[in-house]
Length: 466
Image (cartoon, rainbow, N blue to C red):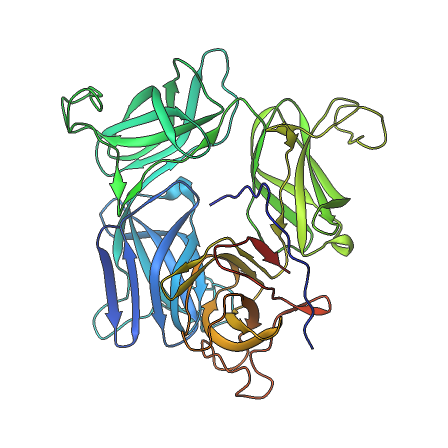
C-alpha cells in the first residue's frame, strides 16, 4: 500500500563493528493463498514454503478458464516466507488468479522462465504443478481533483458478482454518507464513472457492494440485509482517496538513479522534488520532475546518485514562475511547496536497505511495518543489552525489494521491553540463518559505515533504521 508518513519519528543511525486459505503442497513445498480484496498494484500470498530459492509467479486466468498470462512475480527464499507481497499488472488482472511456484535455477534473483532455456522452471510434484487459484475483488482509484461536473473516475474495479461501486464521503480514518454510486458487473470494469452529490469531503471512500436485492437498485441502508459491502476475511473492499487537494503516494524502493512516485495529485502545474536526508528532515535537492494539474501516475524522478541518502523526502511544489523551470529558493515567492493540512506536503521513504516499524506485539509475534532489501536476507530481532543489540529473540527471511507486514515470532526467555531489529544478508545456505554459527555467513547489512538496526519499543514509538 502507498504510504504517507506525516509526523513519523526518525531514529538516529546507529553504527555497529480470502476467507478460506488454499494450500497446495508437494512434499516440503507449499503455497497458501486466500481470496482477498485489494486497492493496490499487488496481491498478498499468505505463506510460501520452499526447499530452494524460487519465485511466486501470479498468472491471470485465460478465457478458457485455465492458467493464463503472467501478471507479476516475486522472489522467495528457502524456508518459510509469510505475507509475500507480489506486484501485479492491473491491466491484465482477472477475477481469478493463480499463484505458481518456480525454482530460481538460472541467474539468482532474475526471473528467466520462458526467456532462458531450462531456467526457473515451475515446481512440480509427480502429477501437477504447485499453483493454487484464488479470487480477488479490487477497487483501484487515484487521488484527483473533481471537476465542475462532479464526476469521479475509478480506473479499475474487479468484482466477483454484479454490484455497485459506491463512493462515500468521510475523513482520513473512516467512510461516511454516500455521495454517489454506479453499477458494476462481475469481472473486470474499467473507468467506472460516479457522479458525486452533496458535501464532497477532502477524503472519499470508493467501496464495492454486491447487488443481491432488486437487481439494478441500490438498496443498502434502506432495505435490511440487501446490497451490503464486499467483505473478504474481515476486510472491506474500499480505500480512502484524496479529492480536491494536493497529495502524493510513494513506496520505499531500492534506488540507483531513479525514484518512482506512484501517484501525484497537484493543485495546478508543479514539481515533485526529491530532497536528501538532513538529520531527519528534507535537505539538499537531488532531483525533480514536472507534474501536470490533477492526476499524475508513476512519475519518474532522476536523482543525483552521488548525493543519494538512505532516506529521501519527496516534496510537492507548485510551478508558478517560468513554466517548467524549478525556481524555489532562487526566485523569491516562486514554486512554493503545496500544502496539506496546513503543512508542506512531504514524507520520508527508504531508498537503501532499511527498516520502518510502526507495529507492535501480538502475543509473542512482533509485527514490523516494512523492510527494504537489495538482496535476499533476514530481519533479526535482538534483545536489549545495555542499549545495544544482544541475544537473538527471533528472525524471518526477507526477499529482495520491499517487504511489508512482517511477522516474527519472539522467544519469551530473555525478552526485553526494547528490542533491536537488524537486517542481515543471506549468503550461506539460502533460508538458513547462520550468522555466529558459520564464519563469514549472513553478516549484517551495512549502509555507509553502519549496520542497519535501531532501538524499538513496540507500541511506544515509530521509527526508521538506515
